Length: 210
Ligand code: HEM
Image 1: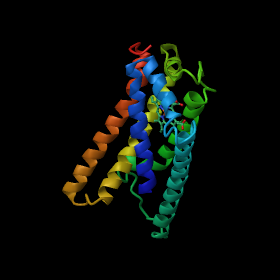
Image 2: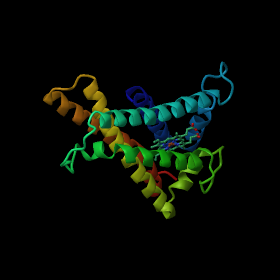
Image 3: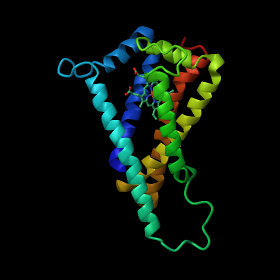
């Protein structure tokens, strides 16, 4: 769970930083997107790095889901007799929404790839102009796309907050003070990541990026 989670978080951080290049202008952003296809050249042929990354991420997502299922089964098996009175509120909101949050994120990623990678669901869908695709996507009249992305990214934030908190605790922050520290660090990390993602659609929506 932790190893695959860390890999996915690494991707999320790098992807968020890459998206921020939109503020450096169209030429620079498109150049960055084309460079993504040439990472490792001349050792690796065109798009090979990208396909290696895609394979690793897909394996990580599948393994993350399998690990979550195994852990949930193990937890259930450890308590075969159901609690007579199950408390309605167990743990934080983020902790209680991990499973459905994960499903929503997976559905979002499928939509997102069809939108900004393959271009099928994008109003422009021009592979040679990713900057234009982003601007067309989050245009003010398509405010509902920004709304949908916002909901998905906030879901990612909740998922990450609980995941990071669990990871920090596993790394030794288990005293009450350590838990408080882990909780605060997870919250700061999740909020920073969400803000880094959300600033792009909102910059387009408000005309800051056009
Ligand atoms: C507002 C936020 C986001 C923006 C503006 C954005 C932008 C983009 C763009 C432009 C691409 C296409 C890159 C290219 O083909 O050159 C892309 C691909 C992708 N994005 Fe995002 N993204 C956002 C959020 C996310 C989130 C939250 C996730 C994951 C939960 C994510 C996962 C991916 C994946 C998996 C790809 C496919 C990469 C590949 O081609 O292998 N993105 N994104």
